[in-house]
Length: 76
Image 1 (cartoon, rainbow, N blue to C red):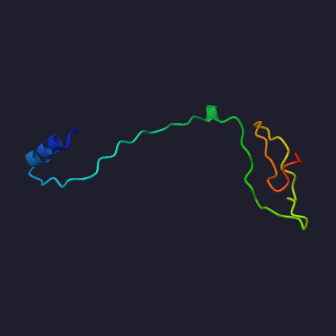
Image 2 (image 1 turned 90 degrees about the horizontal axis):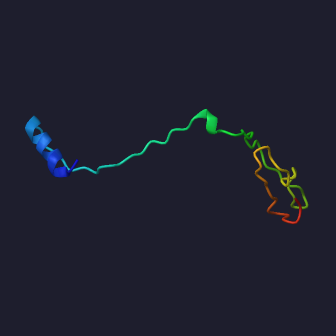
Image 3 (image 1 turned 45 degrees about the vertical axis):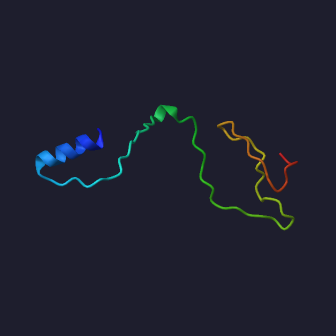
């Protein structure tokens, strides 16, 4: 709707139209069918004395995502 048309509608109702910002919003809907796998939340991060992570991150998760240890990139 054009601002001019919006002003006409407010004038017919006897109200004064104050210019405002108009937003266009698109809603995204998600269904449970789209979720392939759930990955548990990270509960903590720890670093050993030799600057390596306590848990090896080179393992492959169920969803196929592979994580790498940035502190030790040669280790997978």
